Length: 286
Image 1 (cartoon, rainbow, N blue to C red):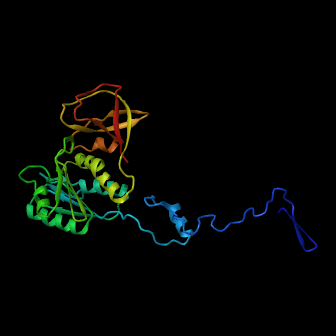
Image 2: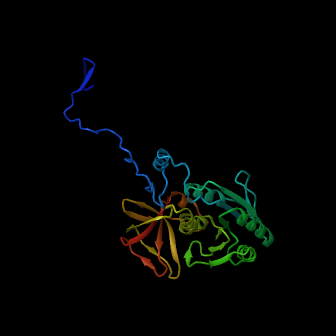
Image 3: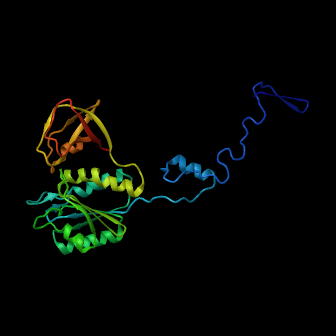
């Protein structure tokens, strides 16, 4: 558009034109022998395109873990069935599957076992043999029908801790065996999700080297909160405009408040009262 052709010659009418301008020079994108992306780089669509553009078709990455969820209990029924006296709808597997998918995990297996030691051992061993991350729900306390800890011992799992000074989720269990990480989560659904967000996400972040763990903020509390010392409380809460308020229905079996929560408000173990307008720590939910 800025060229004039005359007598088989072309003249460029552009005073700003410079020699070599708009010419792709060898090595402009990357020099020979240079490292395209440093170790630990989080791959994204542009990363994939960049590597393809320079002829790299294979790279070493941290794979997403294969996860098995084991639901323990005699009391559950499918949500597709009419309610039966003495039974409850099983929701933990659905909630955990959704949370895992939100964290980028796609390979998720679900097993069910009764409150029986042999059943629990069989399910756990199958999960350990075929998974990197095993999540059990229920059966992790110290009751007559709680067999997760004993089953883990029989499966050779090295226990790192059992029972945490927190609410909800006090019976939480964590162990490792071979290439598998094992979490024994409590049975109540709010406890399951709280422990998933506070502990399992940390494990997924470590295994995948992706920053999926919860972000924290310090904000002002609307209202006040009191509790006994001795346990850290994770409260279902709403965070809006740099203010947070605890929701009602904090019981560990109740999910309605969790469904509308966007953060967990942390009341530390030694704290007995948090006054209104105090600055508190919250963990933002995904």
